[in-house]
Picture 1: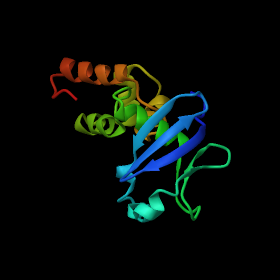
Picture 2: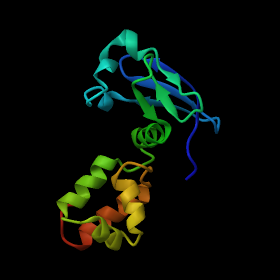
Picture 3: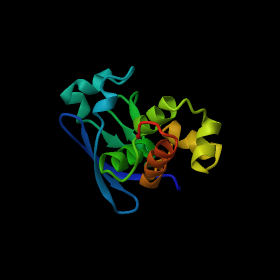
Length: 147
């Protein structure tokens, strides 16, 4: 996957970003999960939240003071998850934990590389929906509660 680049962004209260991508696509991403994260608390202030701009080279979004930002790849993944086009990282991580799978064991269970599991588990890349189906299938075959 090539690195995503943002051409423009506008903030919509209470926690949405309308993003235009270099590819020409537009997405609306809810960043509410960031508002309670350490270092991002200032985003709860409406006057501050609406100061969002695309970083100079399009690698992310930053806010007025330049101290707070979210990288483009994370916003792209989050947008795909929210649109139902990707398996949410939280659900994938819960599947691994529920089944007691290490990174290597998850890779073996799904027939993909450990490096790919690291990307998915860490939220560095969107998780394709077919991986969710594979997780459900794996749990079904192993007599466990499906994802």
